[in-house]
Image 1 (cartoon, rainbow, N blue to C red):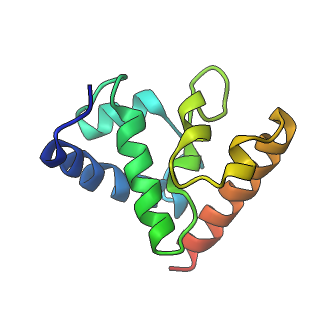
Image 2: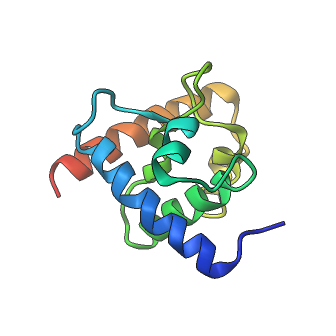
Length: 120
């Protein structure tokens, strides 16, 4: 089940400024967990956060900005969840890469996000 378009838009509008704040270094940490993001947004819940983050990142990708959702990590793993690797805007070469190649891509994307938002 997917979020209704108006609900998705609502959560995207709530998530984006939070992620921009994290990216700009205005927080204690350079990352935010899925749980903390959902708490701060007031939802949407575990089954829907991936849909929201995909929409945020793909809209950023459409603007030639780096993927803001790279800064959202699992609490215990300190890395993105499975869904990060299958966003529609992620290049196929990344989706089909090895775990090590994915990790390198992710770390490079984080650097791009921090650099971009600290200069914009």
